[in-house]
Image 1: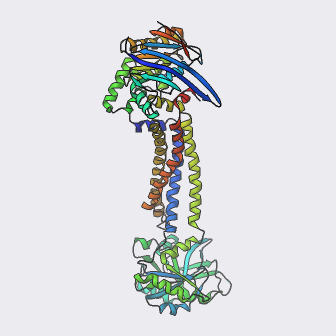
Image 2: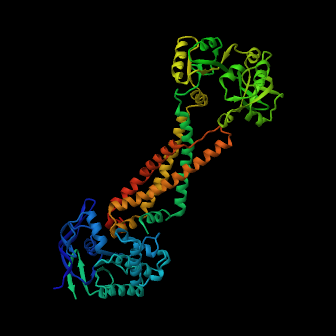
Image 3: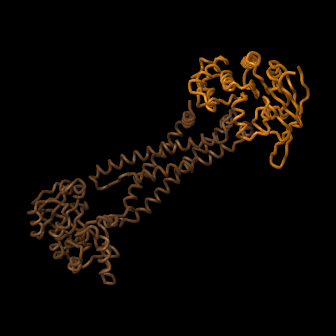
Length: 228
Length: 385
């Protein structure tokens, strides 16, 4: 069995909404090997994004254990999790979430402000990341001067720039047309196959899921199947 | 890019809003600088150390005159070298232009104020001509008065014995100041007290205040206490203070300047607090998802707090410092433009208080939005809750 990137063990997540308790995940267990590209599918409210947030260290489980890259992250404090995220995970969102006041290259540089790299080293890393996503010629452009697909490429470059082994993508093509979506998914495939990145992607789109190595289905907070 | 660059970029996200907010901070600190310098002048007070002249007035107010019979008693006091006295005339030039005119004993005044320079024969002419007047250079230049000219003035207080408030004086000399500082104080005219006292319809033998030239500046405080003790429980109780304190008190007659200034500044800063506070709160509110993304990328809660607080501080610091610089420049311009009459010096003390106000303002307007940013939960913020 290949080395595991993500191990989720009997994880439950309960949200408190006013006086009501909502249990989103029920004792979920999941393994994702290094170099895998997993698509998480399921109806709204099935717990896909919650699971993604837990794997990415954006939230903490109510019970259970989560190991990512060999590190148990469910016990980390908020500050430790922030530091861990900076070095180990890249995030891609449906609405890109770029900083509108910064140019493409500065958006990509943002995570590197948390490192000890020099200005020259940061510039070099940014240039490489933009090259990988095919946007070297748009470095000086602000997000509003880019198309949706280009914005998502910048967001992917930002997720890649600190060279994390895990990418978590929440509906990365949800706001794009079919052609652009396929280009973005193709790019994720390249990152997975040629750069060895482990990718966990939430999607509603079965065509998007086809780009993944495997698809997992969630319903009512539990995994239904594991299809190759 | 640095974190500072990121803060500045965020500040100029809404250029018009930021420019207007900075403008309001600049205006507030400009006002602060100028008013605080006025307040400082009025509240600084003068100690007795090194005072070479004291001014004695009635304890209640200098508008209540003191009798001339006090002169020999004051002169007899140890440490007093010369006693001069002065009575406000209330002069009005031509239609309705007030001029500062005091009735004085010419030679006593000359002795008490060697800083005012004029040829000795002019002082003698002032002393020997009953209807004489001497005018300061600034005043004479302003109205084009020349020595030998007849100066018609009316008094808004004192009528002559025939009931007329129109007076006429012979300008026998124009005095100047011995140095630049004293040259700025030559916008006053003096008339001969003996003539004024004899010709006016009201109180005889009374003056508004005495000026005491001291033999030894080191004894100013002791002499002051002795004088006030001497006249205590008499019909003419006195208040003796340094010349500087007296001059400040003269202007303070229009009201408690310090209190007025404090209330104006309170209103200005309260409004500023609302304006800048609202700008910062709005700025954080509309950036909740972006702040959540920063946290997602690995910025700690404390880093995000620091970034938002730095924005508020930069806004206050830039506007505040620019306001104080403008106040300093304007103060110099006002002082020059008024020939030194309005000394709005934004000095080191005003700057110190100004910088402290900038720090306080930064904390007041930046802390709450920064804490809100710090408390943001990534998952909720990204979900739009």
